[in-house]
Length: 155
Image (cartoon, rainbow, N blue to C red; front, top):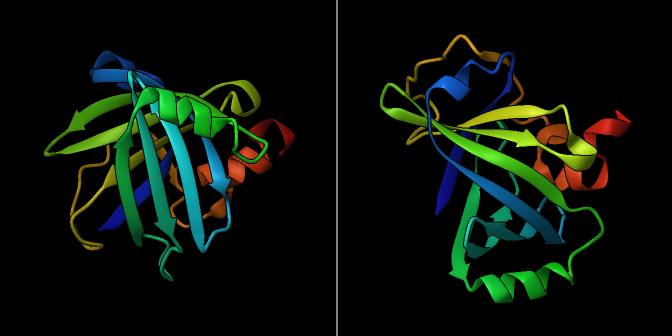
């Protein structure tokens, strides 16, 4: 029930040549408190309720619990969310034995592209493709809950 994740800015669209899947994601927050975020997400044809805890000191690891819910329930819960909805297209790109999730943000966060990789341990080795830029793991400005309140267009 813990997520170990690293985040990077994306410097080119070369990943578009090798992605294996894409989905539109719309999400909002019932709570954007960094100690306990509660997220509602529409992803493709599915709905999800996710609770995340506070990140550890390295910013790599945090508690995560996710449950699939009906699309209709997720749509209804989105109406209760705090102001600031995240809208993005997620591309899945296989690099070596890992999957990078590349999020291309839209609307108020247009222009921001972030790649995330989930790992089994904080020290796990992974391949870094050429299209990865600066690592932003642990930088709260790149958390979706932060972007919902302080969008990229206002930086």
